[in-house]
Length: 246
Image (cartoon, rainbow, N blue to C red; front, side, top):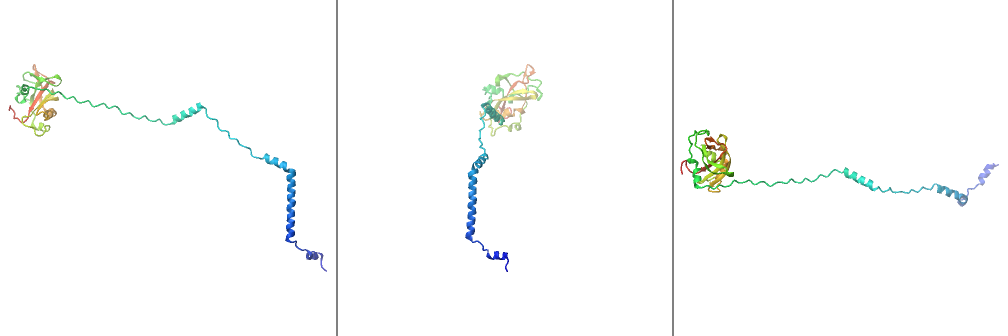
């Protein structure tokens, strides 16, 4: 005798694939029908909720334009913040060099040249090197630079060849001479010498003697028995001649 459970198990058969597909389709249709009913009767409230949560619109408002006064203040502040631009340096005006005034060439006669020949000058009875005693009053022999009175030079010690050779140009011809004017100062020295003449002209002998004159030792002229330190004397030097030769 078989039991009841065994009889159900023996009589049950598994549904076919077509039956299962039909049941699934029916279930889907029922769910769609329910959704349509919900939308039909509750759609208005759903739309209100969707609208209530819609995003809020944002309107961008541009910043107002700055007023002219504020704009000017801002530009002024920018200009003050800029470093100052250095002004270009203007070159200082350069004055042209003042031309050196050349001393005038003083024309002298043959008699003046003969009177200024130092080879014919004596010591006038004064001991050499003193410059303070003896000697007759000097006579004016011409006019020097700037109209000063010239007197013949009286040597304390005549310059040596070694003192002059360092200033003379080469090839000094025999018979050449140079004539300069100098101002006497203390210690039988001279300064402020000027060129008066030379032969041959343009030989540069008078310039050479002017440069070498710082070595000369000459007594100041005596006027009325008084030694005139500061007076001007005329100095002539002949080249290529022996002393005492005319």
